[in-house]
Picture 1 (cartoon, rainbow, N blue to C red):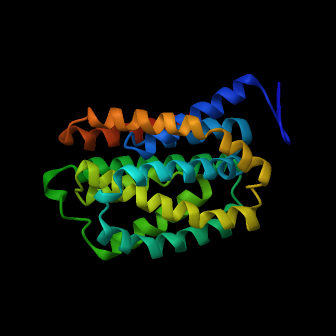
Picture 2: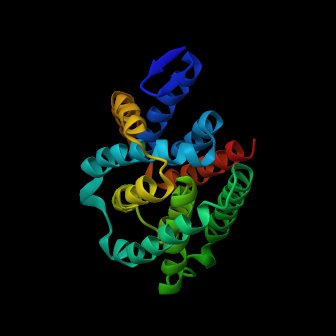
Length: 250
C-alpha cells in the first residue's frame, strides 16, 4: 500500500494511474482513442464521477504537449464554430452530471461512442462526403462534445466524428483537436473545483506526479503517428474509437 496525502493506493492502482497518463499522452499527440480507453481504466478504481475530476488535470497537462507540437496545423474556422456551443454543452453537462450514476454514465458513453463509429463508417461512403458541411452540424457536435467531455471526459469520439467529416488531413485533425480540448478542458476546471468538487489540492498534486508519464506518452504518440500514412489514418481513428467503445462496455 502506498500513502500519498489523503490517498491510499495499492501498487496495482499506481500502475494503472501511470498507464492512464501514458495513454492520455499518446492520445494528445495523434494516437486517437487511447485516451478513451484510459477513461474506464481510471473509473474502475475511483468510480465515474470522481475519476473524471482526477483525470481532467492529466488531460489538461497533456493538452499542452499536443498544442505545442501541432499548434500550427489547427483549422481555426472549424474551432470558431465549435467553441461557443461546446461551452454550452459543458454547462449542460455540469447541470445534469450530478444525476447520472456510474452505470448510467457507462451506458450513455458507450451508446455515444458506438453511434459515432456507425456514423463515421456511413460518412466514409463516397456519396456522403459533403453531407455534414452545415452550421447546424457544428452546433450539434459542439454541444455533444461539451456535454460528453464534462460528464465523462469522452468527447474524443464526437470530435473524431466531426473532424473526420470535415475531411481534415492528419496533422490538421490532430492540431484542431489539440486546441479544442486544451481550451475546453481548462474551461471545465472551475466547474469541477467549485460545483462538483471533484478536484482537490490532493488530487491535483497526485496528477502532477504523473507528468513524466504524460511526457513519455506524448513522445510515443508522435513517433507512432509519424509511421501511419495519411490515407490509413482515417481508418486508424475509426478503429481506435471502436476499441474504446468495447472497453467502455466491458
